[in-house]
Length: 245
Ligand code: NDP
Image (cartoon, rainbow, N blue to C red; front, top):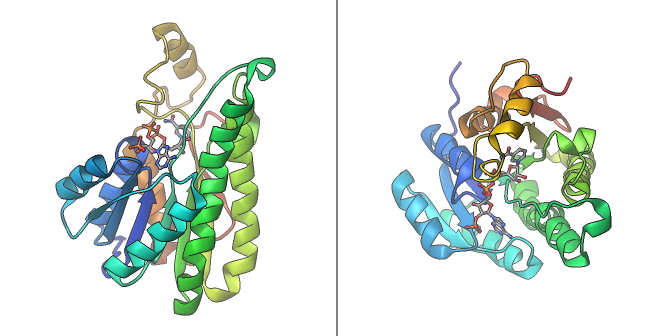
């Protein structure tokens, strides 16, 4: 079984590094034209240049809903379509609940959840007209389980799962499929802050006895974006080495 996305246009938010970059690379390898998005235009252009294959870089802070509307219009203008939307941009501001400041709550919700809502709202119009669309939201296992010290982040990811299921129900009749991928612990800058002891304890709780790689997540996204997944919508695919089951 091969995944062929030739002729499809994909937009991946937060694709200047980490999981988003791996997703953009994999979608490009499958034949899609890819829009690389981060807050820094220089970094987005550099990643697009490395990907080749017609990839283009765009600057956008997804927590700015007006900027997101312009981004989608710019991508549709540059590529002539937008078929695959991957909401990957995300950040953490971890603390115990009593110490979470309003600004740390807001930036996490505004980036991880409202950003995804804004891109979906902007991209859905064209997808509905074309009667084809794939939306994949990058959630997290903590959106399913909750996590100490991550009330804001877990709430944003749980919200993303509710958003995924609601939009899947709304847009299914237009052949727009909406799913979430919930990674466990993946080797990126976000998890580079773990101490050796934390890492050891973590690996001990994972049946496959390792952290995941960005490519592990990207493979699930490419499958959901493909025609092989044409009867799957509203689902959360967990990519965590069996940590949560
Ligand atoms: P990184 O911190 O390595 O990368 C985050 C990416 O998002 C960067 O490209 C960054 O680009 C971009 N970004 C951050 N804020 C914004 C914003 N406001 N607007 C646009 N782009 C933004 O994170 P990961 O690769 O580790 O994580 C990617 C996604 O996967 C996140 O949603 C995260 O919550 C999720 N996830 C990660 C896990 C892990 O173990 N790593 C586990 C579970 C889920 P720039 O700084 O250039 O703007």
